[in-house]
Length: 162
View (cartoon, rainbow, N blue to C red):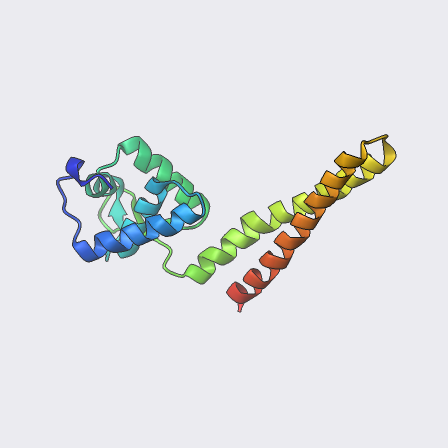
């Protein structure tokens, strides 16, 4: 958040919340700009149009546009109709359970299932071909890691969905 480019001064508590969101996002390797946009929309008491997001965060129109598109695609933000206003406005998803459930259902679950089936295919292929024992060991290591990912993922999924 480069406030030197912005004419709008974000109040300190809101700035700190946005910073918190940016830090959490960085733990998941989510770009800073996405954390800033989500954080700003989360703390905003009303939906904001693109030009206000650009102005308040001091980011380029391209950065804001890409960020909004990415956040909308995962359900982190949504468009909001504002009567009498032509500009599209955006608001953050305030229900974190709903947001995490969607990420788990639409992103993590398919990827984890894909890794499992792909590893089974690789293991079968390695058994059919003359494969170096060291390579077979690497496949076994990947299967163990995949199993551990499932062991970690399943309880997280259950906690969020309850």
